[in-house]
Amino acid sequence: MFTNPVVRTDAPDPQAIQVGDTWYLFHTNSGGRNVPVLTSTNLVDWTEAGDALPTLPDWADAGKTWAPEAIQLAPEKFLLYYTVAGRGSGRQCVGRAVASAPQGPYRDDSAGPLICQAELGGAIDASPFRDTDGSLWLLWKNDGNAIGVDTWLWSQRLAEDGLTLVGEPTKLLKQTEPWEGTLIEGPFFHRQDGRLYLFFAANAYDRAEYAEGYAVCESPTGPCVKAAENPILKTNEAASGPGHASMVVKDGRTWLLYHAWPPGQEGSVDPGRQTWLDEVTWVDGKPVVKGPTGEPQARP
Image (tube, helix red, strand yellow):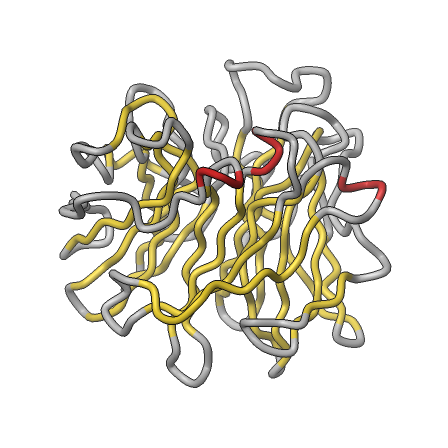
């Protein structure tokens, strides 16, 4: 059995990949680390493993390195997509870094950001996705709420090496529903039984109204239709403001990694946004999240 949260320190925007028998979890900067990385063999017991991105590129400033997500492209090739403060634009931008091992150190040798969209408020929350046909894609959000404009979720094809974008970006979704407030963010793709699901968080991250929803897409370039039952993960007596999730699959079961505040401590630094783990079941093609679950439950 285990009891949430699985990471009790400040660990926002969690994402994990499995390499061999080990899981590697990355999250937004905290504790003086640009990209903290933790390891686990069971998704429940996590050990700190340092800073996956100890050195930022010359074009970036430290202090706001957010929402890192990694993907393995080859046995000794791992890419990390991350949000960082772009010095030239004065906005948050997306960068990419490469490592030969999952925990890093990742290095970004680029001369500038991969995506910035400064005129749209900046670019944040990049999420890589390999589709069943082998194609690589990148999702992200333009940080429109930083300047009072729409927050779109975008997708674009990645080159086979994952280092550059191919073609043109596509707008998928923006904030439209009352529960979403003024923004949607934190996108990730997941295929289940052939269907492509686009998960996203919405509303203000430091409020109890923050929650998680999803849409169903015809392809990585859309069109996408939001689910009528959104949000599928929201505040309850166990946790507040759950969201910015990512999905892991273990032994055929799907689990959601996400962050949440202790109730009444929204916006706090200590403990901040802790990492939670709850199972997703699929009922008539719809993802159902059992959570936030504060009671003991069976381990994955």
